[in-house]
Length: 452
Image (cartoon, rainbow, N blue to C red):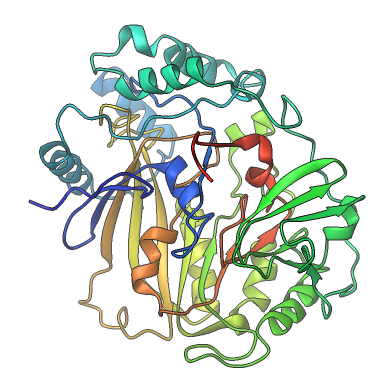
């Protein structure tokens, strides 16, 4: 039996000895990534209620209906589905080894922002919202996580520091030059090491911004406060042809010399979470997708030179064959060979898949492709791609399990990491995208009582 890892300040609730199966808590994984080994963070991020029951089924109700659908439609995940038997086996293992009465996530403090965000969802999602609102009453599983979160809410004030709704965050038009890249904006100084104030968003866009200190910094921009983790760097800009030269110069500015594992301007780990086109996301207008533009084409042309030999590259995909093909074609352009596939299997708080594992329309998982540059691991035809499974109860839309705690064992002791299309910052990592500060807004965070 694998050991159950203590849940205090670690997002890993359970992991088998081979590290091929992990039960992870998503909000804690994001909070954990805001700190370092020497200075772990004290703050926790607001979250959504953990789902108590699976989503309402949209699957054909009879075998004949299924046959009729397959005649005219291409089901989700056709040709790229993760092995159903593997996912079922991993769920069984967690159920056997994780304490049987325990929820499959840690207690959550519910985000006050949720009601406003759900107002524009389509009818199918309204049914899911109703399931969420009635989950305490209808669930067969003891809702200890939700009750614990509710108890916390009743005992502690649910107050946001500056606003009750998430601020609008629109960056100005991209300046095509390499403005201030050679002279990064340093947040704070030795005289004021914990805060930095700027009057306009343009001051921090299209330029390299750094917190060079081993402690967090509060960034106030246009009256809005953001938490910047220790030694975090970011380039807040659109990802496209106009900003590609700025990124390359920023990489050389950040890393002007070679490390033990990477050359000047090169990285040991690159994580991508592209906004792949998705009809439901486009309808809800949650964020821009690649329907009208394709930054992957730009990245394919310029990012490869910044990936060090032997570096790892990870890319989140959807259950659509064309998306997987695009990601693998991009890997090939960078001389990156696929070596592993990780599935994030989404479950309810009681460990049930949120939809049928073998469903036609909606899979309960997303797949992360993991490759290594210049690797021989995938060259042999009989060398199968290794698979790992991350089981995690979903959080707010677009929040994925943060991979820092899971990927670090595969990286050098001192490494350079970049997240592209990032929606939050990470301590000691570099983040690039037009929403890198989104989940670092102070309104998303609270501090445990008694924390220092």
